Length: 67
Image (cartoon, rainbow, N blue to C red; front, side):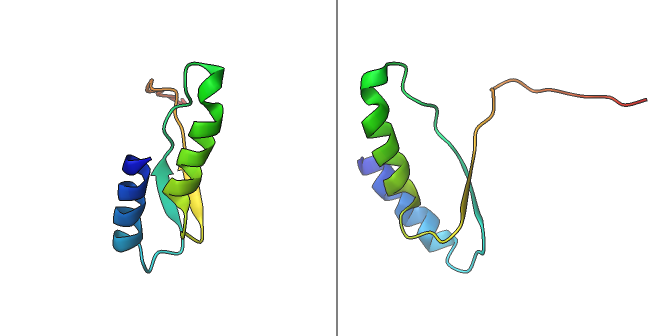
């Protein structure tokens, strides 16, 4: 949780005037027992922010070419 608290402080400091904050969402825990801690981590990470968009990718680049 210390990491989430520190990250939240940095985001709040750097994004005071932002109308929307985009954050890379950390991956969920591998085991189901960590679900509650994961949700608490996300709550602490986004605490005090008005609008947050959490973005999670697959980790693979996808290039689509239209002809």
